Length: 74
Image (cartoon, rainbow, N blue to C red; front, side):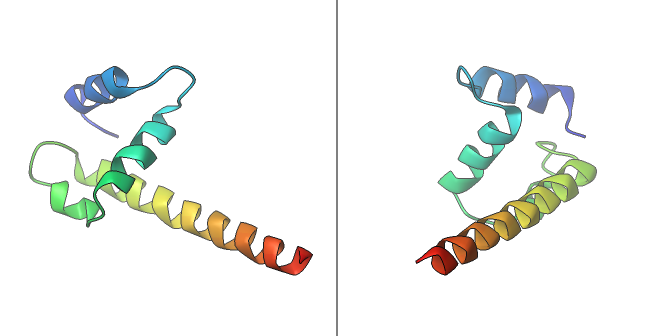
């Protein structure tokens, strides 16, 4: 869970047709780093950071699976 302040910031950054996950992914791709560094900065809660880390792990897995399928199709 993210704080109300972070939710509102994400809502402002959200583009038409973009999900909150899309916003987070876009922002993360701008600057690679450890999301857990944000914990304690009051930008994100520890729980929120863990959820984002899990989301990134799942997205990497999906990307790798997609790449493997593409390579098999060649």
